[in-house]
Image (cartoon, rainbow over all chains, first blue to last red; front, side, top):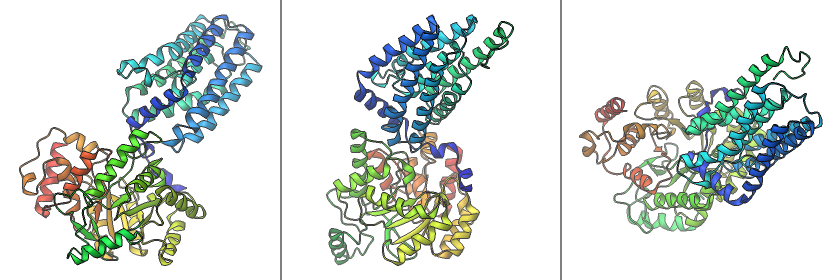
Length: 228
Length: 310
């Protein structure tokens, strides 16, 4: 398959911004009122970060895993695949991430004492749950294009960054959300949409906060099994 | 649904021939085009096709959106009403093939020239993909099948040529875009009995003028031109820039028309395939296939002015 090197990123952009947003609008209409359930689930995840006990961690991972599984099936496999031939692969990656998060629920991490980790995680998770849907209003398109956690991929990945940061998750759980973030940001950039910067910025903030927190935690707990 | 396979098209062709049109004059269905579209003969057969076709990359990949599908069907209706024939798609274009097929089923065009591609790694999977594409298009057979971006061309091309020999396909071609693998394209053009080559060509990207277009003339290979507007970037860059005085000489009122006339005026070019999701734009594009075409001197000026203005 040596031919693949001849393709550029723009060659794989097979739809217009208009088709992308219309897909979001129609999907939002079809799954309503699942957005309300997802919003409630997001608030539960925020509460779990505040409590951060072993049980709260389990609940956060289970809810998050359910969100990834739903987005993989309902969005990627049954909707996005209509305009993006790569969507079935995204669906498989989202299913794998759901499994990883459920595995994390079986073995919650050690409690963190880093305020940076806790506050940073809360901030990013809050942004993904509460602020992300409001971005649709910035463009003046109303709620029909609202991007809600556990309904569409980008806020789901952002909330995941917040949770992984706050709960000091295993580094393996970061890979797929980061890969999705890169893929989504590149797609949105090719579509010349300003929203491209949102998931990428949240990913950079989460990684930076995680690395900084790791520095803080090193003297406190040198046996921590998680690099982030 | 090739023009030959549809009973209505045979009647129309007979009437056209009786009227003295013989290929280049198309019978207008309901709404007459302002002037007949210029046609070019396919070098390998002599069959005339209009110089303006319709691409579907990005524009027709609208998923299940019923509103957008209706808009695409309206574009195709306007295209056929204006005398257009060749529509080009690919399995790579998401839902575009199905969108085209749905519109074909509704419109039942009298003179469709269906051009699709095979785009899959490995020759063994080619026939399956071609059959899936044919079902999506809802046509009895394709007029033209091309190996998309030369992907596994060594394996696909023998199969396409065998389909042609068996009468299951009328023409065979290869494609590339954005200047990729021109060296290999030239080798295939020189060695294989293909009917068409599809390349990117516009007033700014003129590399094919050096070797591929002359070779196409020499080898009697038809040329289909994709990305005539650089995927909209060229017309966007020229938006608001006044069209120089020469526009009126060749009956152009917009840069888009001038850019298309620049392309189809090249003697090696058989057809350009601008893609659009706008009825107004498809009508504007079709107008570029009518009236006077620029001579070589004017083509040079168009390229220079477009370069300066873009």
